[in-house]
Every structure is written in C-alpha cells, then in structure tokens.
Length: 349
Ligand code: SAM
Ligand code: FES
Image (tube, rainbow, N blue to C red; front, side, top):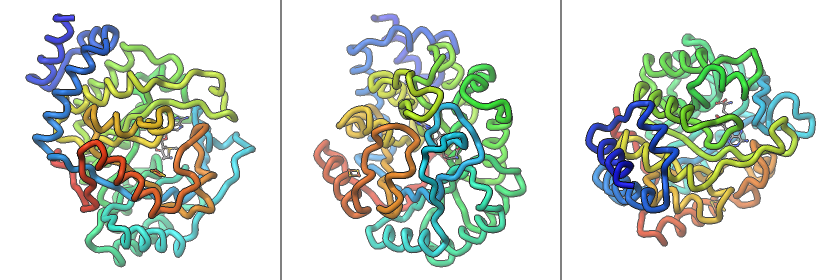
C-alpha cells in the first residue's frame, strides 16, 4: 500500500508517471488508495477552479453515421436505430433555448453524417457565431481533413472534442473497422491543436480487451497531447452491436482514472459524463468528488433525445432541457459545489 501511495505522491509532484508505474498503480488500486487519490484530486481542482462546475449545453444534431465502430449504438450497420437529422433552424432554436437557460457553451455532436458537408457545417457554425458572439462553440463531429477543421475554426468554432479512444494501434483495430486507424485519429488531434482549437480527447473505460498496460499508454498519450479537456466514461454495451454481451466498464475504475487525470493535468476540464451517470445513479456526483469539473446537460429537442443512443439505458432521454439543467444544478449544489454557465475556458491554454 505504501508503495502505491508513493506513486500517487510522485504523480502529484512530477505530474507524470512512466508506463510501467501507471500499470502498477492501476493494477494495485484499492478503496483506501482511491480515497487518498480523490482527496488530492479535489485539492487540485479547488486550487485551479474553486468549487465551480461548468455546464455545457449538448446538442446531438444527427445520429446518422458512416462509420461502423463496434461499440457504438449509432454505427452504420445498426438497422434498428431510428435515424434523425436536425435542420439548421432547429439547431439554432436549441441554442436560443440554451442561451435563455444561461448556457454560454454549446457542444454540437453528431455521427459522421455525410449530409453535413464541410460547407453546410461551416455555415451552421457561422450562423451560431453571428447570433451568439459571447458563446463558445464546440464541435464533436468526428474526423475531417486539416483544411476542413480550419474552415470550421474560421467560421467561429473554438473547441473540438475527439476522443482518441485508445492509444494502442492493435487495440484500436479490435474496436473499429479496418477503414479507421488510431494513427489517423491522433493526427486529427494534432491538426486541431495546431489550428488553435481548445481540444478535448479521451477514451472509454472497460472496452473489450482493455488492460492496465493499455490504459497506461492512454495516460502517457494524454500527457503528451496536453489537451484542454479530457472526456472519459465507462464503455456500456448496446444491444444491437457486436459488443452486446461484453461487460460494462466500472464506476470504480472510471473514478480512479478521473482522479489520476486531475493530478496529472491539474488545469484540465474534466467532465463527469452521462455514461457515468448511467452506470450509477450518483455517478456524476461521485465523478465530481473524484476530480471532475464539467457536466453537459442535454439541449437536444425532446422528440429526438431517445434516438441518440450510443449505449443501453442512457439517462435523461425524457426530460426537457430546463428540467435537465435544474436537476443537475440541484445535484451539484447538494454536494457543495456551484454550477457556472459562463464560457469556462480551460486554464490549460
Ligand atoms: N462521431 C463523433 C466522434 O467519433 O468523435 C462524435 C460522436 S461519438 C458517438 C462520441 C463518443 O461516444 C465516442 O468518442 C465514444 O467514446 C463514445 N461512445 C460510443 N459508444 C459508446 C458506448 N457503447 N459506451 C460508452 N461510450 C460510447
Ligand atoms: Fe437530465 Fe437529470 S441531468 S434529468
């Protein structure tokens, strides 16, 4: 136990561990060790961001996807998915509703939908930028060429979320079809950084074939990329995917890694994800108490909420945007934190 406490102290002091140390720490974690880790993570979080938890309004604007990731409920081969695509006016009205609720960051997420061409997506960003000059616009719409990413940036997008999913090339190929590669995914992230986006990356916890050694590679990659945001959440099986019988990732390991990321990158923005809230009723609160400082209530129209299903039993699919916001605010206040709707740019710039 003392040996592992020393590793956590080292992580706090040096903000880094070797791959071997990461694997040892992850393998030998225990409730006692987690308790110690979380207390340090909360200290760092408070030092950097006080008791503020940032709210981002999430708009899931299309669930069409040309990709076929094996874990994902909206993968191309899932014929059972009910597909939808919001038009520009509807997306704008979600932003207006969100603005009225206090949101100053909009996160636009979708599958890789060929109907949203570069020109169309850039035009949408331009319209949102025109109506909301004081807001941050975050895109999460998959892989594009560097030139396209630049077009979106010039149109007014500030941030981009693209999880690397797993740093290891062969693990990546066990989770994705041959048309996708880990190398290309990482190149997209470097391109986004180079253009000047605030970048978010991340991975799922508990994907099939994942090991502590593979997670160690993910942690080293996070350190190397040094993103502004890191989104991690448990893998949860979806009934209409090849991974339907695989076990979900655990709350315990997700919390442990949230704490580790807060110590490694103290200023990073770290969401307590909807997936975390799905595997445990207090998952998001526990995530905050382990070092997370962002939550993303849903602003998508209620009529399509139940169709953006990446995994089974997703929470918050039946609520109105205002209900979702209020519910999260209450939950956050109850554990002694306060919600902030301001833009909340990362301090890790
Ligand atoms: N198409 C964009 C992309 O590829 O980045 C954005 C949408 S994609 C569905 C968003 C994220 O959902 C993925 O990066 C993945 O980590 C996560 N995700 C997909 N299927 C999941 C599952 N079954 N359980 C948990 N998270 C999942
Ligand atoms: Fe959506 Fe609670 S966060 S209903």
